[in-house]
Image (cartoon, rainbow, N blue to C red; front, side):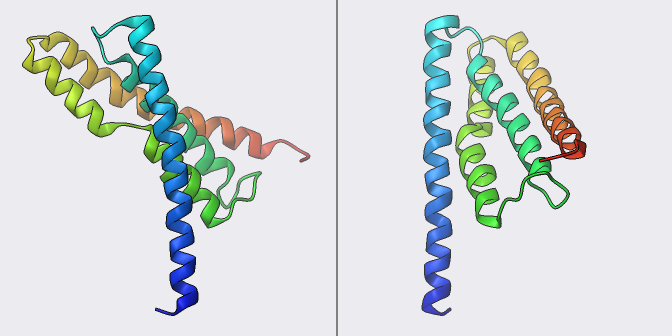
Length: 141
C-alpha cells in the first residue's frame, strides 16, 4: 500500500469515527431524555433510535444514491451511514435490554420489544426510502 493510499484510508477512518461520535452522543442524549421523561419500564430510547436511525439510513441511501437528487461522495455516504447511523443505532443495546427484561421476569415486555422493534425498523427504512424516492422525482433542484 502506498503512502497516499494509507493517508486516504486513514482520512476515511477518521471521517467514520467523527460520524460515530455524533451518532453516539445523539444516542446518549435520547437515553437521558427517556430516563427523565418515561422512566425505565420499557427501552423506549432504543426503540426510538433504531426506528429513527433506520428511517435516516433508508432516506439517505435513496436520496444520495445513484438515482438520488443529491450527490454524495462515497466518503459522505460512509460518514452518514456507517458513522452517524452506526453510532446512533443500538442493536447490541436492543439485545441486552431484551435479555434484561427476560432475566428480570418481564417476559411480556421482552416479547413486545422483540416484535415491535424489528418491524418498526423495517417500516422506518421503507418510509425513509419512499420519502427520498418521491423527492427524487420532483422537478427542479
